[in-house]
Image (cartoon, rainbow, N blue to C red):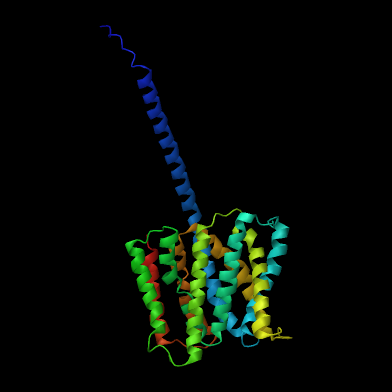
Length: 331
């Protein structure tokens, strides 16, 4: 039986149908791109975790080694020397690999932020703090970054703080606050107050650097910008050292020299680069929670290499921090 002829729906209907088909096609393409990005992110996860582990181990030992260095060299000159060494290592290494470039104007803010807030302020305040308190205690206090990063990232980066992450931050911060309670140290001792206050101020500076690192629109890679950050930090640190500590020491012992070599190459050059890469790949709050493992490892290393002993308060605080870390980073 012959079918009746179909009437022409008209140009308007045809145009509308074509538009719907185009929208559906665009949605399919967009979904394909999103799936590809998810797969790429998943493939990059092992490298990100590996960099995170390296940062934790390198920085945990970094402050233990620096505690040894400040016995022979003043704190600011110690930080200046290690940063200068990192600069000397990075420039020829990047030049040989073809990665040495002049930074673009758009990357100048991130150079300033990381150099001044992280390499200068955080490192200098932490190193000076090491002269007043034990390495284990200084490390823990210096890594209170979640206390400052989480609300800052929520305010400026619009990063949502999930319920689980909020609980993890709260537990971790509670563990850190155990170190500054009324019974933790003598609040009438000026040196004790400086030893606890300077690392906390360092943590605030570092948290600001983490948040801006996450927000910055990068042109060059973190590795390509590292020499310029180290160069600027070295110049600023040298000026501060001359102003507050006078001339650099004419000589230093072998332990201090080896400590500065480790700090310059591993703790500064490689450590700062790895942390910058991690900060670009994960949310700011996650980055801050992840590095909470550093003080826990640092407590153990300080006990082993410096003979500081295992302070019961530090042990309890470390366990609480690990619980908060496990809660806050679990997906």
